[in-house]
Image 1: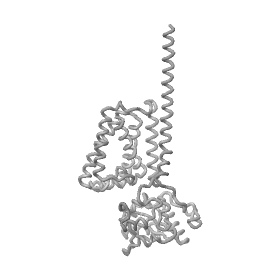
Image 2 (image 1 turned 90 degrees about the horizontal axis):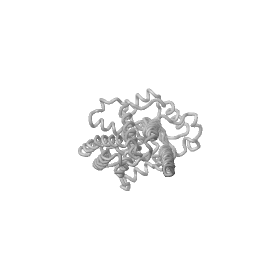
Image 3 (image 1 turned 90 degrees about the vertical axis):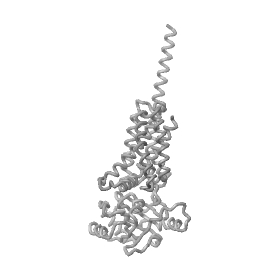
Image 4 (image 1 turned 180 degrees about the horizontal axis):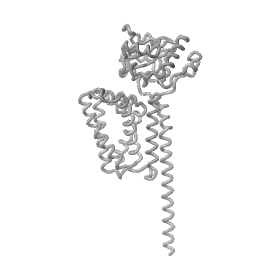
Length: 385
């Protein structure tokens, strides 16, 4: 029983966490689903992102409740209902291949459609066992204090999702993460030395149709890459900062290029609206949404290596760009990686969570010892009388 419960709990926690880390990635996957089922025109633009956050929070909340044994019967029923919905859906996806990847674990762990279906079959069986015998789940938090874990989990998951939407994912599972040397990675794929193709669709094409991918990326020194997958829907709230950064690049001699998938008329409207004087080149929109979860977003490269990423909401301001980039804080390599991001999550969430649980166990243990002491005193009194 507890084995099924822990398998369910850890799967839900992992699935919810990777979606909370990258809500926009799950949003794009939901938009793919909507497109395949002919629902795109019926959905408001904001709805896929809202659904992405809500679904991720629900998965995370179910997992935490299952792990700690909170509201065991209700949580087990909710997990069963969830699996009854997603299992037939993943069977349909496996049979039809309407999408290449269901997105259940984001970019952290990519499964084939059939692997996803059989994984859900196992989880469906585990959830049925949990519903059948919920009271056999061992509690790790007292019934009196379980609300602290529940409220903290909801609050944390919402804050994490909003932070990663407003800024960038705290862990970047995608191929275009900080530190990757793009021309080297691309050439490894071309020569067949890469384990799996990740950069096959990445290219930089001029308006004349010339492929300048390697030649532009291999220019020595620092360079800036503005990424705007779709200029028609790009956030124009930071256009002054973008123009100031471009002027800084012109002054210091750094190449600056905007990558987009939009057509020439959309580029012209963007230039008229923002006063943009920088050059544009074309890349596939899906690839650009993978490069950075911001529209627009900015990359700093040194040679072909990605040094730093900025979302539209946190671009360097003009006042900080007063010297060559290598002398500024803005040019310092961005700290990232799976280990650092995972440690941050452990510190932010799981350490306080287990502190709550430890304090609760101490409190429950104290009450238990107090009852034993009173029982012993009563027994002794009865013997004496």
